[in-house]
Length: 96
Image (cartoon, rainbow, N blue to C red):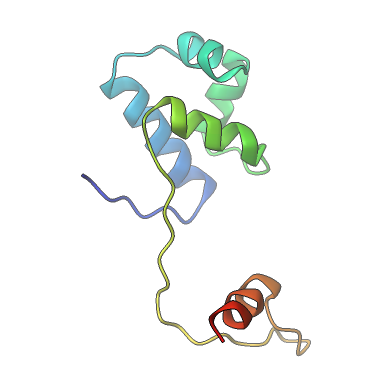
């Protein structure tokens, strides 16, 4: 099993492209399996931000990939306006 750190849309696009090529799929074939257009696959592979999360997750599944997260152990900091990041706050609440 190989682990890849994904922090940006470009990272996930590179991962999708690499895996697609490794298993010998063209963009059109991947698009058909995912239920998207070949243009969408091209855009996601090029790091298009704002892509549908549902389609991205379906693409990872079609490619035999899973999405995992890991707590980096960093403390939750309030934003400049004093508002805590809502995702981090929810994660902290659930751990309490």
